[in-house]
Length: 316
Ligand code: PMV
Image (cartoon, rainbow, N blue to C red; front, side):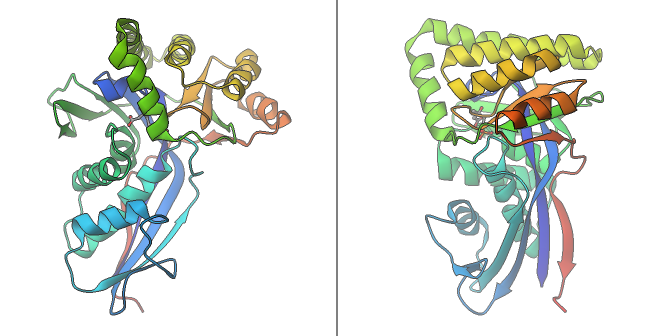
């Protein structure tokens, strides 16, 4: 038996960091995917022909520990068009696709099970994290994640005293440009930095709550298809993320360069490097502005599909 499973990367439109403290966030899947092909093998487990390594394959190893109870090893191959360590959910796409492949091999595949198990994998590998990226990579399209659950929720995920409800949301047509700072921001470091601020100061907690308010306003702007308002909300969210300390001089230069051609522009994901997103009616101008500065940039098309079994059967 051999399976191929893929899952998309994502951008966080609004609400990163505050979502760790139970505020809502909006994330959307983009058409960059990670693909995992897996089959049981008589020999010990290999990843892209190399022996499984705790350091190089931390997420895959965790997924195998969690889900693979078979005495056989596995032969796993991966490929990805999601830029790595760029705040675009590459580790979540890998976790979801790997978990999806292991679930498909054992006839347990479902979108929800992928979201749950992949969150366990991310949490075990990187520590404090919200299920935003893994839920988005599982469901695709766009999600609202937060405490205000209703009956249309896709699933609810608990960890300690926190619980998150994940809902699918409809988005109007919008054009986002993603620009890469070229700097690596480790998510765990940025989350720890914000935690020091939020745990020690009521001002920090106010900023987190203000981000939550902005996400609710952004949701309203999406519902009424008011992209100008959405852009302003993104700008204000970026200002608050700067106060939380997760912006960098490069991010600020990229934000300033994109602003004249954008409705809104902000860092996306953990920050400290990573990527910047611009909501714009002039995507070519934003791409050109960032490329002139030497940064990779692309127009992000939304991904309609979340985790998907692309192939399942006996290898020929
Ligand atoms: O891993 P990234 O860069 O997509 O950032 C994740 C978003 C955070 O809110 C900063 C952390 C989390 O787990 O939600």
